[in-house]
Image (cartoon, rainbow, N blue to C red):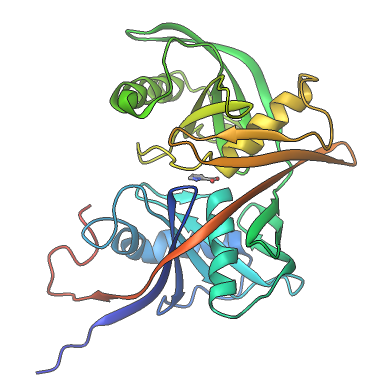
Length: 313
Ligand code: PYC
């Protein structure tokens, strides 16, 4: 008997090395609410599809999913809900750059400026003739400066808590060399910091979990190099659009970056985003520029008889 498979069409890309898997067809209807409302339906009714799409055996721990939706705001070209191996993201900078290149690949957009609806607000994205994408993120800010935590085996660590579309703990002072050879050590350290923040109930605004940890070091090739721990214990191969936004907000608030001045943020693998801030009615609007490349166009097949149909959970 012919099997009744569920099929989901996706386009894969990478932005500065960090993968994005845009779901373009085959996902169940989440209703007509805002992206924040549809995110709740996604979480409660279809979380198994999140893991089916991004986790092994179809994906891997670094894949960020992006569900392409009809926007509820008609000024937007698209709506999007980002997700990963651990759960859901508010915004995703590298993912938005990947989404814009995907829309171009699909022939849905040409060069120009577009608005995109996310669960945490509307962002603007401009695709230029060199295939670079510049995004104007949601307003970003530092929530707490110089927060001290005692991290087991590492001692006293100080960082800032900032919002860039996701919650970040940003650490400037540490003893690590930011290079790929130190990946396991960097992960161990940042996971310990995250666990300490959780244990001590140190959160972002309204009790939101600080689920991204970002550490920095100087580099000759850019203004700064970072290592970003993502919620599912993977590291961001890109310089992290929302993490760079959080960083830009802190720099601006410290008087270290002026409005319109360029900041080059390098990732642990050497990819670079260019950042700036624009001030709008006192709000810090981060502007992030990067590029993405399409890597695959495929149809995921879900066979209910497969023990690992919904991913290795
Ligand atoms: O680019 O904002 C970003 C991001 C978040 C998690 C992975 N990448």
